[in-house]
Length: 415
Length: 102
Image 1 (cartoon, rainbow over the protein chains, first blue to last red):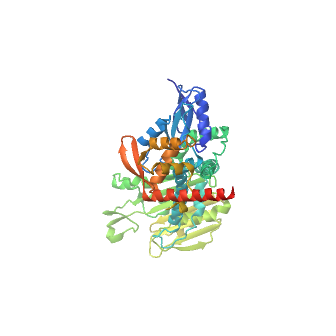
Image 2 (image 1 turned 135 degrees about the horizontal axis):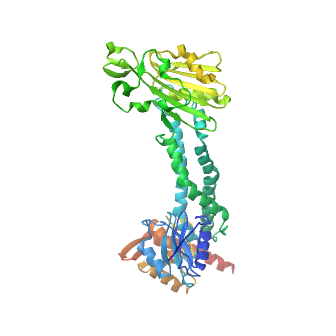
Image 3 (image 1 turned 45 degrees about the vertical axis):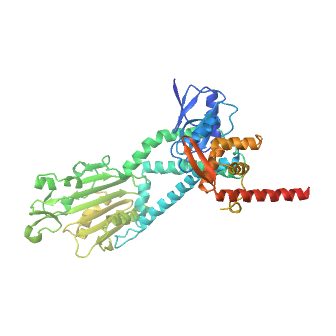
């Protein structure tokens, strides 16, 4: 018995449309064995077969399969169970022209759709609650002593213009949402008509547009969804390189510091995993075609007995001096340069510290913003010129304000 | 919840409740009763019957009394009887109104 796959040309919520299409297939000798992303048929269909979609779990106690009582009642009336269609319907069929319709009046058919309609409404409510929760989380970050909830929006804007994400979101807005809306409209029109005792609204019938939508979903969903998830939440293996292999210009921590430094694994001759802290990662946005981050974390060549602090000789050399420099470079639209710099400064800001911001003039730069914390080794700086922006986060003994010439080199194009 | 709260019963609802007045019934017996009573004027589809049994059970108008394999038997509750009586009174009133005008 051969299997034939077909793209479904009607909405799953167009009950008479789907039933009619299945009956048309039966008249061509095809009998459905499953309906999902596509329809699968076997060549054992009989012309004249009637198919009916029976809304699933429309009664307390009914689970993923019809109850024995239902199967028996339907069988006695001449109807056989075929299979379940998603979490929406049970498909029944009959070849007996004398078998009564499953629903002998419109109101009871409307009642049988109660659960499906409730599910759709509850799905909509859940979506609203989820987006509201995300909004609350975004606005209510409770560990932040100096919150500015909207300053990071320019960074979010750049992230939204990631070509893959943008393609995905555009697809969602112009492809998925209209389909959801159309399906909801179809189901509610059917439900309301039946509850009023009116017959099922006429089906728009098979449509090439729905076929195209289903083909696009089949091809794009398995590729695009994992790719977006990986790009947003993945480990960045595709976009991350060790600093030593990174070719784009950046300010080296070696140039900023006065004391001789080396990577942890060179000094201590073991690999603690800290190597991963000296990495560069590229991002992609249509609004910032050049966008990368470089993280550097080095140790003094004169090691103390214990690792990691920002002071060169604390406690009589007991600890090793370990400065760090994180920087992000953007080449974006000039109009976005300053907001993006402020957003990146906020993203680098340690949320449990009170930061002071100061804007200084520097020849050749449109703006220079310095951020410091009283009695604390953490500092930040942002330098912008035209559409070029470099933002730094530093922890160590040097003062960034003493190295503005070096920091500004990156945006002046001299590196 | 009485008939006034839930609105008038549909014809299949009315006949399904009526089928329980004299004795407990299972699905097949209800279908046969309604067909016989209405001389085949009202023929209950299996989906209609199954949906109505579920609805009546949820609303406490009927309750399950016996499960024998695939066969489930139900009986009318006091509430179900009251709902049926309200609908009967309503229909009688309609009929009287009509007869006065003829």
